[in-house]
Length: 196
Image (cartoon, rainbow, N blue to C red; front, side, top):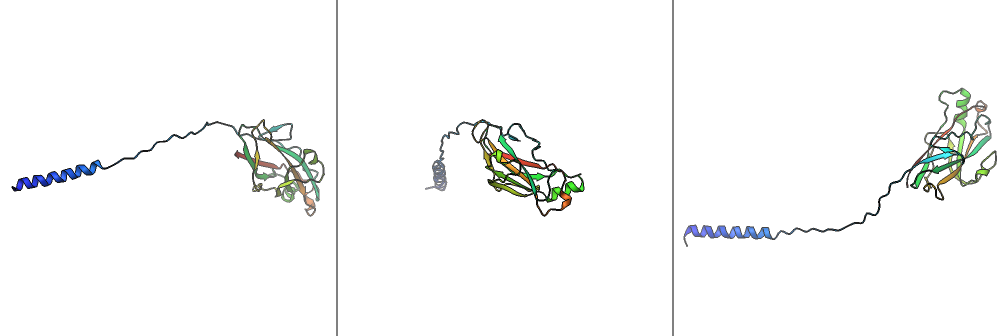
């Protein structure tokens, strides 16, 4: 066989092998459909009030502090409700005293006062100086870091479980300095809600 013919034959074999390798490549593809269901929009709206009136910035007038003496307390029910269309979880996210530019007596009261927040207390049992029993959610000082141990749930507005009545007790311990008596403050309880 002449040399040029051998070279052409070898080139033809390599070319055939190259084409053969390209034809063995396989591409796999899988398809499927997922039913995402329906997507709904909703709203979240957390309100506080006294059972008759409520708002996002509710003024808790029922908790008066000017008559606190060492060893005494005042208490009042506070209703937390969901006015939105989506169930939510809420919690306490701090308590401030409102005594930044107050008198020495007011500041002494704010420093010595203690707050306790209970759930599962009938509103009629959270007035005057009645002793209360219920689930203790928070007990301690009026502090920016005050919080519940775990969030509480509220159903959507218009359904059972859309509101939660808390009993808030503000006390002045018996060992508090007499300078705290007669002081005034405006405790602000902050609550935050998020979608469940």
